[in-house]
Length: 379
Image (cartoon, rainbow, N blue to C red):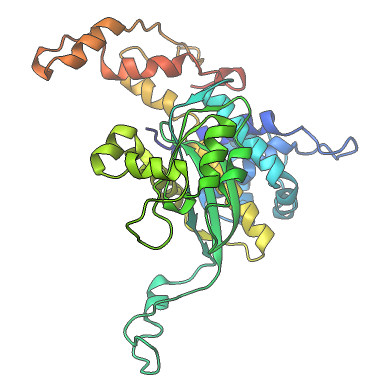
């Protein structure tokens, strides 16, 4: 589980560190060298975090000297400079590289993801009133159903993601337009996962159900796939294909879904809820490629917002704070008693012996992977 940071300072510093790990300082040897690419990238993340536009983030940087100090800016970039930097910084290849940078800084160099989930969701193209869309056909007798409008649009921006169920980090993303089948997006999502990340189990809904996807995950990549075999018309016949028939046996009842771990697939729905609640569900861009770039920026901002949440939460939870008087991150030693924890799990709650507090036990695996003080101090 994770939270999202609400501190602009934390988000700006984390975005600057991610930008330094994903982009070169300058795009060309003869660049004016007035702003670095990580600085412009951090300005774009700040714009998405504040839910404003290019002119709005420019005014924020002008009015608040603290933003310029955190970013190391001597001059405020013009809104046209930020607009022209978007196609260069948020193309698919460089955006995936920025996502990889957030994963490396949060989970370490060679993480093992026990459960990952894939799903897609639609976004709104443009600002409009949902109430107006719902009521605009009400009362028209010529409509098929005069009281309700059954279809409001035919095309919409579609975002597909592969997320870590434990940390809610987005591991890979695919932006496009919908409606379109989800089953064809799974190989592209898996191809963009960092090579140093090991996926053990992948959960998906029935939209990804196909024998080819099971074979691609299990036989080519060694990933345990859990996808309900429910696509197509309802029938009493067994599904076609060995792996789809296995899914019918493994995921046939709620108890079997709980035992197999498929019940954690809803974590990807939580990720979409976090993105839409914190960053909005509408896109200001109008063209196809601009909407794709805006979706990528929203996903990167989401990863940046939860990048430092482990440090903030554990700093409040532990008896000894993680921050030293000098403002640097200091990791207290944690020695969990594994044998006592295994014994406690077998006993009823009143008879369990306190080995470590829950917060101290939870912080142990993450303390070993926090490397953020290499890029900037955390106070």
